[in-house]
Length: 101
Image 1: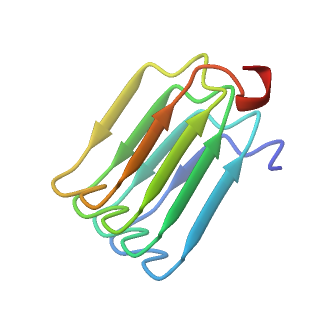
Image 2: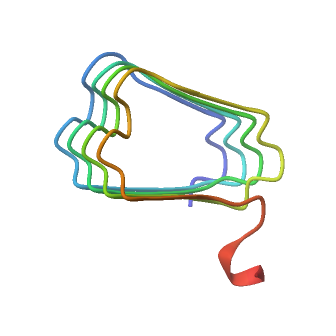
């Protein structure tokens, strides 16, 4: 967990080779990723009860196979760039935690 992380921002092509991203934070308010970031990531899971905005640039998570966002009761906006999540086979977005049903 990241109890005080309020914002996560990247420039172009950051973490391009990371295979799995699990982001768990009660304080995270915004995620803004530059073009090509996490391009070759295969698995993505985000749990962030305070998240209000999620924005990714071109080709972010281009290769991700499964993307899960859960426990997002405050999420207000999602912006997705050109060909981001292009090869995704499973995408689930929930406002409550998986365990809570």
